[in-house]
Every structure is written in C-alpha cells, then in structure tokens.
Image (cartoon, rainbow, N blue to C red):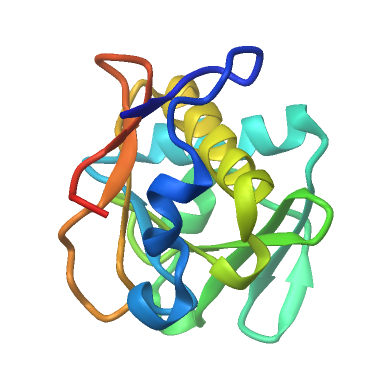
Length: 166
C-alpha cells in the first residue's frame, strides 16, 4: 500500500489505516522523524516552511522570536533552554518540531486532528512534502517510546508506504 502525490488517488484509505490514527492505540501524539539528518536538512525544512507560507511559531524556552538559521540554533548550548517550532500546514492541524539535535528531525502530530480520509491525506501530503524536499525517509511510530515505524515516506518509491500491518 502507498500514498501517491496529491493529484493522484491515494492507495491508502482511511478504512485501511485507521488503526494507525487511533489515539488509544498509537497515543495521541505519535513520534515522526527524519533519521540521519544534518544541519542543512533542518535549514531546508525551515526554507520549505517559509516558502509554503505555512503558519509557524518558533520558541526558545518561554519566549517566541523569529526563526533563526539552523546553524545558529544548533550552535547554542543545551543549557540555553528547550527549543520548539510549531507549524500549521493547514488550519486546525498543528505539528510540533523539537530542535534538540541536528542529527534527527523529530516532530509530533496530534492524531485527534487527523481523523478520516481528510486527515490521512493531510498527514501523508505533509510527510511527502518534507521527504521530497530532503530526499530522506520520514517515519511515524507510536507515542509510547517504540522507535519501530508503522508508516512513512520512502524516497526510493516517492510515496508513503505501510511499514507494519494495521
């Protein structure tokens, strides 16, 4: 099963993947990540967010500010506070990026905002957009600490694929 570009019919339907969107099964906030990232990947992500015109909010600790360059963020001392980037690729759907390390792009989505086929399409389009820009996999696993992906964007086939049985 796979999810193709937005202009084509999705192969992954809500009825087939709804268990991966069940907050009771996956946790409300599953982990999504891009492994083997570098600072340049983060910068490409920031550029993508700006170029798409997505609403965003960058925060260092309790203060919000303009999003700096990725190199500046990752040259900060870890003692300088927790850094997050909230992005709304579509109204009503928030994605929270955790800027803890340059070696992995780590974020969460709220499954309660992604119910039904529209939610599947929104998430998969977002994963495809990031994966295509970076040329890297974008993997989703449950919230409860397991790093075993259940689905993700696969750059070798240019689409979202299931990595586990629903």
